[in-house]
Image (cartoon, rainbow, N blue to C red; front, side, top):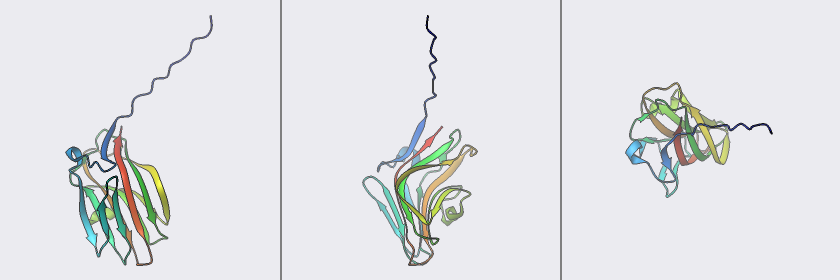
Length: 160
């Protein structure tokens, strides 16, 4: 007789969508909220994405979900997004914080880009050490009018 074979069983990845191509998953998130603006910027809910932009001196724009999100028992917060953060004066951030005010710009749990761009990419934040409720938000900032920061978020979800 021939040798047997091994079947590897993989655990299914459990996903909870927070945002999915225009679906704000409001039962869980409460929907997007334009939570902070300094001097200006753009907040637009498009058919398949949320768009934030800043392009002035110290312009800041932030959007977060209206509801606190329970991150207990999740390992990753993932995002499918595209962004531009020019030079060292443009910032785009995915933030997890206890507040959804301007303080999210310095959230201790965040994914941040400056001086780079991507047309569309999936990235993640490790949230496995967080137990309890947190706000989840997006943030753009520019230091002067010569810089640009914008993002388009297409999907956001939690994985075990």
